[in-house]
Length: 88
Image (cartoon, rainbow, N blue to C red):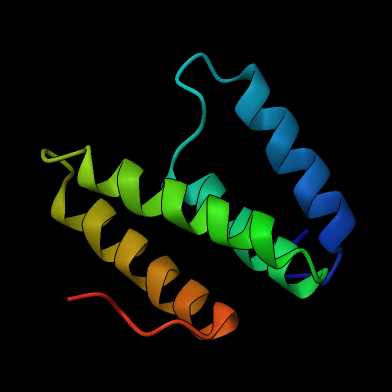
């Protein structure tokens, strides 16, 4: 839904998915929720989800190289959308 510009559907679907997930969601969900909320004008929620995504990644030291690369691409996209510079 996010890629289609259906931001309300994107947020509703991702938030429902997080609630149904016994692990409480992942950075994949959180980065797209951050971008969706930002584009909907909900900057506080966007920042919250972006922070959750960063924490989730930091809490996963054993991610495969493929997952790390994918999440880094999503992070870079979210940073661009949210107007953030990458923390070093």
